[in-house]
Length: 456
Ligand code: FES
Ligand SMILES: [Fe+2]
Image (cartoon, rainbow, N blue to C red; front, side, top):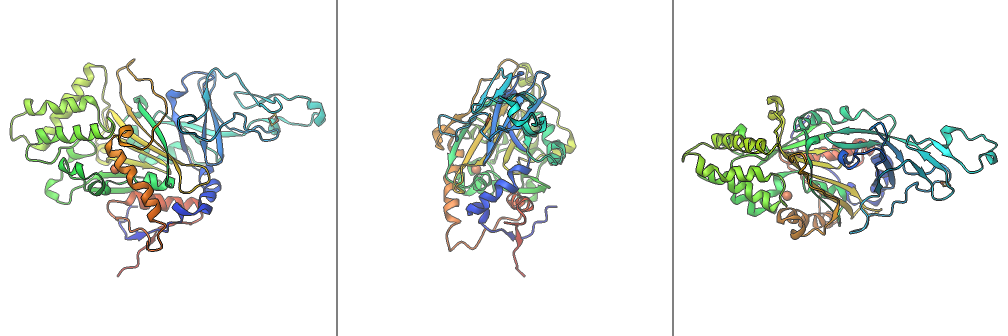
């Protein structure tokens, strides 16, 4: 599944207008896509639009608590049922509302109930009463939930969401993301293709070159693996003697002679420079106690085990109960998952740092970039958040994410150079990138498929 073969792929998926156009037919209408967190539509009558490329979908909660989704288009003459302006910095992220009993088209007043059935047509006799419910209802879209997210799929013949998620869904499922809530959520319109943007967050191979300051606190050698549609990256070590199970994912010892100190320094630096995400206050506080509470000479393994124990206890005291992660999940859990095609989740037991990207307009050089932090809060202490437009600066996003942003548009520009011979992705550390292109090609009639590098 994840043969580490030397491969390359063409750049048309990033640069070609015509490829972007083809995504509208071949990709977006055929993949499960995350719409929003379920908690954003808690009550009957709550609704919102999800918009991607030329498609707009209305997702709503019905009286019985179930979700429904429809294409946002009136079957009469094709007006958008709900007017959705283009996303606009500081103004429009999506269109949403509450207490809906029906949808009335603003053009000629045709009306639809929350099941999408037509309930009113002006002058139906003019059609000789020949219009059938099938002709006048809204076009339904598949909707399902996973891990506290709402997903839609426009393809009536799609595989079920559970099957789509596969093993990745089982592994992340153990982390009970459904019990986490938004800590913050931000978006920006960015000057690169949506794939250039998501790929900036798919692999830790860039840490040494991009986030140089982090090398003072930890090593960032990574491996990555394909899981069918999805893929995972994970810390690895160049040297077997440093291998340790406790170093999995985001909770690991820092680099340095005294793990009591380095663990704290690593986690604090990450937390503070990644916009107070990718960890929690509890974990940082618990790490700050290690120096006082553990004897000198303690091993990194013991240090991590003690750190997690006291963080878990401190969380329990404030009503945040950690899920038990089964051993088989722990063995495969990794650091961060890329969920095909456009979603990224860096997960921990009590937090997640996540990304989503979408194309913006018909410009292959632009995308809508979103990032958000989830956290497990004590009941009643979840913060109120909404989507905030935030220019991609360090002040808005933290210095680490700003460093990632500083590459993206220049990758987009660089790939256009006539001197660029094509990508040379790292077969060990950048499998997630290769896998994205492999899977994209499967949807895109083979276009952009990775090929083996011909080297003897
Ligand atoms: S287009 Fe909707 S009622 Fe005419
Ligand atoms: Fe980064």
